[in-house]
Length: 387
Image (cartoon, rainbow, N blue to C red; front, side, top):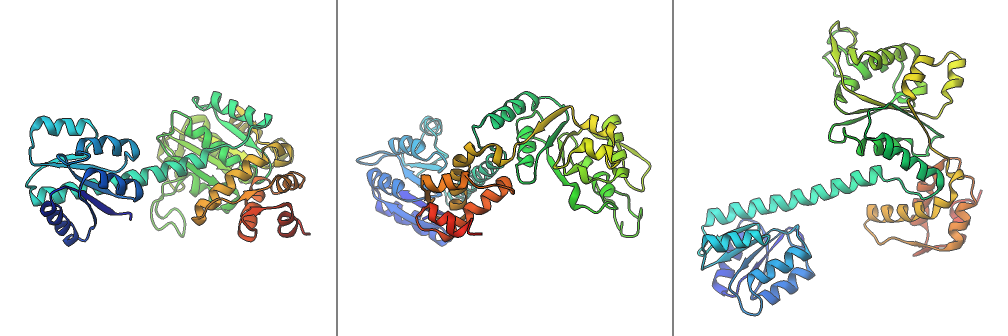
């Protein structure tokens, strides 16, 4: 019953008039003849707005407003009264009403108020969904000693502008650490721009990072703003930086030293205020010895070093991770989360996780799809480790 408006009024004629007007405007409508009936419907269904009379038997509009504002504060309540005064309007808004309309209601004002209330409800829902996504994208799951140390380090370094180098195997969650640092930093309201250095051809990496001017090379048909400029005021996350070409490394080093970049094909120096966080699955000091990585850039990037442990080094976190994945996957599929028994968890903890967290997430999704209501050790043996 989402996107439906609930009308609560003990005067049948008023109720029917409001319902006809809103139905004509293509809104779904439900009616209640008094406050108690309205409250019952409100707690049993989902509404996008409520039009509620103030003077009613059994439960008046102000009492309904107080209860509804506690039960579901996101639903806008518009109070209607034939005894309207400025004082009662002020009181209504103080108690949490979205707006106050006098009887008989002005048709245009009523429709504008309803439209604005629905817009606010929609925006509130979108904000909650977005916040959930943001929270999920920076949430670090685990209570093992290595993870607690990383969380403590993030707490200390997030508020600074110190550059951070995150190391660890593929799939351990290095990007999660970077997002968490940014989310807890003073730059959190500015963008976090992510660049996967391994996914961009070496001949295009400079254009990707620093941008280019129109005509600077054959396919440069228009000016392009690079990632450094896009991240101005925020954070630039250079993932898999160990795969960056030596030429590009030299330009990144200069940008870090001087706080300035020059677009490919351009001459103008552009100042940028960017915090750089880098990550790699390679041993950069070994890459330095092999002449694949600049030592001076390594020292610039590694003011703070964070090593993310493999899943095999933190198997005590597997129950927490599995629980989170079960809930996330259930939410994605629109179904109730499945349970998993203790022996199935023990079986997962005994596995060699070469793909780390990413592999575990995929395994849990496979088990959700193929298993019954409760995931058992037999399911793990049949669908995961049968090889």
